[in-house]
Image 1: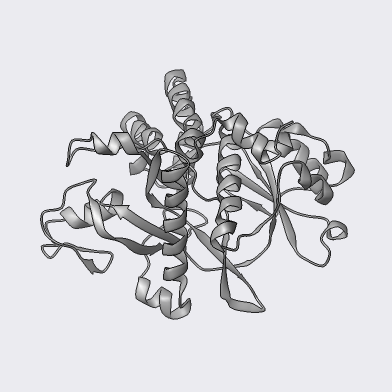
Image 2 (image 1 turned 90 degrees about the vertical axis):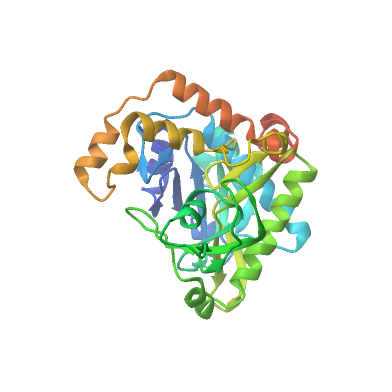
Amino acid sequence: MTDLTVKLLNSVFGGPIHEGKVRYSYLVNPVYCNGRRLRAVYVSDQISSDDFVWSDLILGKGEILNAMSTGMKVRLRRFGIKTDLVAWGKDIDRYLDPGLRGNPELYKRLVIVEELEMLKGELLPRALLLGTAAAQYADPNNPDHIVYGVKLAAGLQQGDRLPEPLFTVSTKAAIGHDVPQDSVEFLERYPGSDRFTMDVFTYINEVSETEGRSFFGDSKFEVGVRPEKPAEYILADEVATGDSSRIIPIGRYRDRLRGKPLIGDDKEYFRIETRKLYGVNKLDPKIPEHVAQVGAIKLPQDLIGKTREIYSRGPKLVFGLSLEQLQWQLGMVA
């Protein structure tokens, strides 16, 4: 299901130049770009898991993700981090055709970004032993506990903090599952991208621990460069959201039972439930029949409601603000 605003954007722009799992990118009319190549990126209420997009919408999810990502990018400026962000909130009108200006939904869900030459991979800093890192560590065929090329001490349990955050890299598959990349080879191609990644990870955690009451167990970043400055990394795409990160409430982590599953206030709950209900992790998004099978599923209302409740806690956990307060701060609402 596609929301009505996407249909409006498609009619005005003539269709997206890129369609992600929940985001739609449109090329901004050069008349408004002052020589730059810009995109308008709209965040929908769609949700994906295990690389499948579900037909049901999580109402309000798009504006939550957009406010959180934009709010973090604005804050990262004080740490000297460059981002692709050009305009947000009511300032987007300067880059839109008249038929789209003054639209309250777009103020909350659309940003103008600079088009960059993207690094060929997703950068994944990890502070906790969770997910694929925990699986690698516990693999009986890995007695030396080598995780993403780094030898870790024996005796760690699921959810433990790592001695130092790990820099890891995966592919970014257009269709299908991402797979790990060799970080040594990646750094030969993109020297210094590890330091940039870990700096950003440090800074987003500083924001969430001081303004909010959470920290990021891991995160996913996409990074680009301007062709004329290939050594100057620029943070792009979404940042510090429940789709891209594990958001761990500080109190929940403090009170956890060591070694037991640790679920943050992010997409992980939805991922676990859809695997349990439908075995979606055993399906292949490259197989059209599997895509159609997932697309035909109607999610239970209690799962939809619980998922929305979890996403709605994000702004308070990361910024110490309600969604409405964060949107007001960013000029997304009156």
